[in-house]
Image (tube, rainbow, N blue to C red):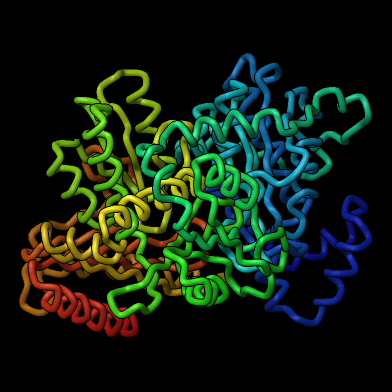
Length: 563
């Protein structure tokens, strides 16, 4: 069925509501828009769904949520004998239609006889991960589009270990979704199914916060120094306000200043185009408050509170954003060193990072004789390793992170957790202040000890059907035309994870390693219409590291334009 046939079907069928049809009729003269909305079903990747909230098969709406939820329920029923009793947990964020999509998913799943636990209000992604394990559910769902623009929403799926589902499970779920040929196959919700729906309140919140707070390393330090320590915090109008402020307060941070315009939930994010704590534009108000209040640090969490961004002052007193790799390096050093000093570092301790994450934190961990485990991009792979190690006892997980500002310290959940990350970042900042240092000075000290690691990530957005085809074309070209060297530096190793790399599942990722410890990786995003290009350079001289990074950046930019 082509996109125009799909379009006509939605307009002509009695299944779809009046408002949906009015919306679709408003684009009847825009064939390009019709094509984009109906040329495919919204892609169910390993992170679930993510798309613009509009009518159409390639969009987020109650119908795509309904179909996905029914397919997901069918998967759990086929693979878990006790699925009906154990149930599925659902959380949602502050975005447009998040609560509606949560209720739609809950009702659809309830019609299959599976118990559904859903929250009475907004909850963070790490809270959902914790809840799945706490209630022994077979799976979970978070309605969120993370840090995407306001017009987006999404649907993330979790397994019974509290981590996002692995690719092989996602494929099976997708098969169940695709087996639903008509929406009329999905059972209609009736009052009799209401007893399958269990509303969750604040009872689990406190347990989650307690689990987070157990990861504090130097509570006595906070008690002694925190009164004069100023933290500016912004939840970027998302779900972080309640858990983050409670954890900071419980930990002893009394001087927390919240960005007022961004404190309360807002589906339009107080005018922030993209509520992404990685980007300085999203932190404009927070940085201004950091300066006005002469605060020590600015911490921002994204709407579903799984990612965290940090702004500090450099040696000239200017506000700068730390990169995800820099935050990861600082956390690695602080956490491992602190646990070792407290005699709490396990002999089989490990940290886990992705293949596109800097070696900065890895080299620090190795210096402390902590094992470093590399995994593919996606926190689900970290969660999967944590589950394995919990069962076989081969390693004790200490921390894990991605360069894209996602961190987990402790084992209270199986996904990145900005709640625990905020607590630990605040603690490490206070620790360095107690030593007469700023975070910036501590970072430079680490660079001077281990060398300068400089990284850059470029994202090339390519929207729609043509964009998807262009991304495939770029990846095909890069596979067929391998580099032997770039600007006089030889390639020493090439990895194509799609063809297969030992110890890793297959994935559409290419990585080049160079003789001077620089590297480049290419990866299409699994959740957004873009290809990501990761570059890293290393040298004992910061100037030389920066120069190599700039040269790589210019070279790759020119190459991609020529494809």
